[in-house]
Structure formats: structure tokens, C-alpha cells
Image (cartoon, rainbow, N blue to C red; front, top):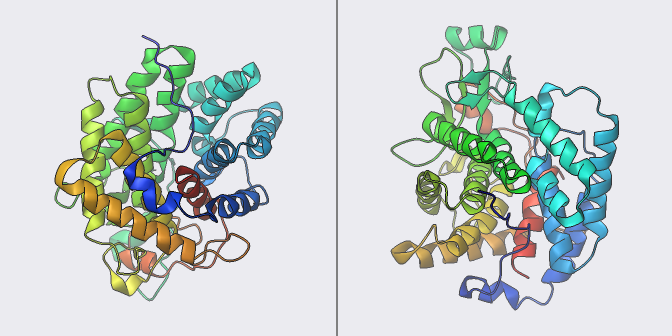
Length: 375
């Protein structure tokens, strides 16, 4: 059964948007933020690109301009023409955005590139249900003053394969959207398989928060509560739930997103942000998390993932997060206090001390989604 994909348009028209839709400066903010996105250095592909490209498509739709869609189109066509053989980092490609781009343009070269990318991603080895992100995971000596245990030192010296929460925003949504543009439901089944694998492997059953990663041969996942990681997880889950609402396992995806949102409610700071490790004030704020949550919380409300007693709480939390992000933007639309690429460590203290102050796709992208959503 072929399903029509939902285009990457901002969601509006709801009481959950009333406060921010009255902000006359929002369109100009979005334009400045989207302009910043097209100036960033992209590597075709790397972690964080997916949300940036989705943000550009949303900005074009919200502002009624082809400018940002044209950038995405040109970039994807350039990559398709020159990339040659696929490489492991292609797992971070903006696959869902490619599918949206095909729906917007009808460019069969984009479709061909997307399906070829999907076929390559299916060729990877699995750890349980989930495809490996890395065959040798990129573990780092931790920031801060923590020392690794002997076992952790051994893992750092010879890191095993693993899978990472970031990829919940890559594979499952991409496969779900491939199902809609190709009419091949095997992609939908794989999207659900991957999403459920990440839930089973990384979501904490007690808190609802996600761990950052799991390593082959290790009994437990590592590092619960990395803030931006919760954003990758939430947007990935909601995208799959929205794109495949009729799938028999869709409610499991929605339930995982619901548990994550409720967990995040209890860890939001008074200023509307979240700490780099959520609920850990010693880690200090990391502002990209608020942008992810402002967007994701409202998406969850619109999809009916959050209803009843939690709806008003989630709406109020989304508004506080939105306001916190807006206050953190400079005159050039750059979001302050965004951390560098985190990579990975088996030590929680690493996540408390990742350097901040970077203008990067994973900061600007969710801001664009958030602002486009409110128009």
C-alpha cells in the first residue's frame, strides 16, 4: 500500500502556537537563521547535516521562497554527481530531506540517489536489529578531569562496533519516507524495525530518556541523558510516527516519544533551556536542546502523541523553550552556547565539559524548524 508522504511544512493553526504566531519579528528571524544555514561548511555527509537540510526546506515553505530549497537541491545534485562509491559516513546523509526534495521537485536524479543510498545502508552489518553506525566506534579521551577505568581504557584503545542515538534521526525517518516515494512497503517495515531497535537498545525503561550509544559485546548502553541526543531521538521518533501512522507498530513509536517528552518536562531549567546532561546543573546549559524540544514538543501535540493532562504542560514547556532560544540568538541569527561535536566517551563527565560557542548545523537547523513551525 502506497502512502502519501507529509511534506516538510511547518505546523500551525493550533492554540499551541498562539503566543509565537503573534510575534511580528518571527519571519525576519527565520530568514536570518536560514541565511546562516546556507553559509555553513557541509561535508556531504556528516553528523548534524540532516536537521540543517530539513530546516532549510521548512524555511522555504514557511517564507514562500525557493531560495533554501534551491540550495538543498543543488547540494544534493552535486553530491549525487560526484560522490562515487558510498562510504560509512553516508549513514549521516540527509535522507529524509532528499525524499522531501524529490516530492517538491520531481527530480528523478534525487530519487535515484535516495534509493541508491538506501540500498547501501541496508548492506551494513546489524547489531541485533540496528545497523552499526561505526565498525570502530569514535570513542574519545574524556573532556574534564575524569580518568578511564582499565576496562574503559581497553575500549578506547580498540573500540568495538556500536550504534548511536543520533542515527535514530537518520535511518528510520529516511526509510519511512522512501516507502512513501517508492511505494515499497519493505522500506516502511525496515523503518519500524530500526526505530524499535533504537528504543530497545537505548531508551531507559525507568526514566524514558535515551542513552547515547551501545557497543558490541558490552551488556549495557552508555551515558544516559545527553541533551542534544534526546533531540535526535525525539525528532526521529515523531517523523516515523507521522509518516507511517497506519503501521501496526506505530503506537510503540508514539509511546516511546511520549515517555521521552514526559521525562524532558521534569528536567527543563527555569530559564527554558536544558543542561548539556539533562537534569545535571553542573553540566550547564547547551542551547540546541531547547530548539529541538520547542519544535518536537509542538509536533507531538499536533500529532496527538501528547494529549490529556500533559498537553498544557507540554505546550507551556515548548513556549518557554522557544522564548529561551529566541533570547539566545544574536543579530546574525546565530544560536549561542551550542556545543561542538560531542563524539563519544564512556565517561559521563565528558558530556559536562564539551566546548560551547559554535555556529553549526545541529544548532541552526532546529532553530529554523522551530521558527518555521510558528509561522
